[in-house]
Amino acid sequence: MVSSKLALVLMLTAGGVLGRSSDNLRRLDRRQQPGGGGGGGFGNGGADPLLHPATSGAGASLSATSGAQHHWATDASGMTGAELKEHLPPGFFLGTSVDGPDLKDPVALSLVKYMPWVTPGNALKMQSVYENENQWKEVLDAVTKSAGDTKIKWKYHTLIWGAQQSKTMMQQSFSKEAMMKTITDFVTNKMCSKIIKETDFWAIDVLNEVFDDSGNGFKKNGYFEVIGEEGYKEIFKLVKQKCPNYKLIINEYGLETASSPKSNFAFKTIKSWLADGVGIDAVALQYHVQLDNKYEDMLASIQRWTKESIPVILSEIDIPINLPPSKEDLEKQAQQYGNVIQAALEGGAFGATFWGITDLHTWFGTQTEQGVGHGTKGAPLLFDAQGKPKPAVAAIVDVFKKWGNKQAGIEGGRATDIGSGNGGKDGSSDTSGDAGAGAGAGAGAGAGAGAGAGAGAGAGGAGAGGAGAGGAGGWGGMPGGGGPGGPGKPGWNGQHGGPWIHPKTPHYGLAQPGPELSGWGGAPGGGFPGGNTEREDYSPNGHKQHRRAMAAQRRRR
Image (cartoon, rainbow, N blue to C red; front, side, top):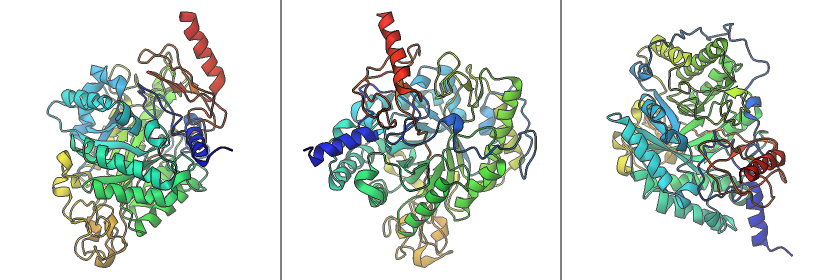
């Protein structure tokens, strides 16, 4: 008979948490691999990015205006990227992800200063921190050096995700109590006591891609099966206690429309958590969108949160087009980028992070170094492979110019509310204290007087204080509502299995296959979990792609 301890190890392995271990892993979860572990191959239960749930029906032609959709200026001649920072609206930020390949590209690094709210793509995943902490040091040092006098603010990405977890740590997690202990040890001894104090962090992605795409509950990711929903809530309370001066975020994909079952489940769940006093400070909507996403849908997806006084950011924006892109493709992409940023501003979001810097380093890949775009879709970012601003940069600048000096965000949820997080202090951003379960990690007054007694005190909710008692001033404080802001970060997860190891990618070497289990988060039996890698990509074809890659490796020997 298989012991219960062994059964749990097998479950965690098949679910993706153990199935992602590698010694020298350098992946960006939206670049070299499409998502988290567990129930499906493009990660853990999501969709092919080119058939992403963000699309809404047939969509609208970008040549037609609908609702508040506009036509944006797209002439980027003479631009450098500095215009993005020069015309940035008050209360709003622009950011980018940065990871291994970017560190070897001086042109890409030179552009970070124009999008200075940085998210490390892989370096702070739990596996990297436990097994290769130098990876984070390399990212921090390279970005800091290239930024010069520009102040960089960092978001910790990510604590809980169904992939890239430490095998050693997870093998100790045979019950809810054991798993919560390992998480507590990591939060206490690694994240909050050490890493978070090394530079100017402002936020932490506490939960990453935890909602199932069906809208029927939570994703089976190796964590949920053990600790359940209550465990997720306990983790937020733990991080709020150990890192009290940082904004805590749920980062989720597939919430780019307000009408999908997944979006509705996430909205209902997060509001319920806030009412229970869970310290969620903002929702991060990933925004991997397509050309046919409708403006009205994007606007509604943001406003549903901000109308409830829940702060929102867009956290992983990219918009793929045809490869090689035509002038018409670039124009359509630019218009859609303008629409996304306009929706963010009009909807009350307070920031936007792009999932990469240049088209040379992106999870979609290029025509010659293919990623999830399979050589036909890609070029999803603001700067081309040479670091030259694309028409999308001009479109965003046009949005900013037309927006003018109006404040972005919502009360208690603006970029200007963020103080300095360096050394564990949040500067002027934390004036409310930790009443109740955390009384607002709050910008400004946070929960304020009277909030501590409320059920939502820990989350920055007004509790007994009500609107005007300081509740609305705190991060995530809901006037009279007793709840903090929301989380959200979508990831790419899918229905297929198996790592695709591309033999020609220059940045990375080949993975060594492991035992045939569930795939790297693939559908059961659909791939190979193993691999000490310097380069790993994934495709829906699991075994066939793997065999081709290994055959290519043998031919070179």
